[in-house]
Image (cartoon, rainbow, N blue to C red; front, side, top):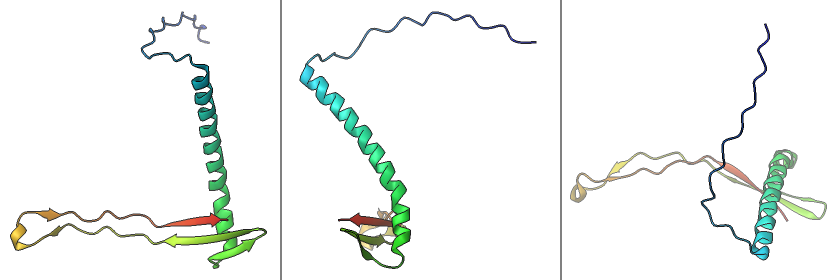
Length: 112
């Protein structure tokens, strides 16, 4: 047995605006340009993130290569293990020096 089609209901009345509205055409243009630039940045970063593994794999063991008119350099930062908390000295009884938080290692790719 098929369900009866639902009747559409009117949308709830919109709440009044609580923010000021800026009508300066120059500022509106700047805001629009900014929004487009942010979208472009996101798209370009996604493209770079997709290309990076292929480039790094192509480098092999070399830290720096020349590809066409570009110098491609890889630098690696090793991971740091976290360190435990340490009680300081007799003069500072009860105080604890917090341990250092660890971080993952990462590889940086530079193309000039």
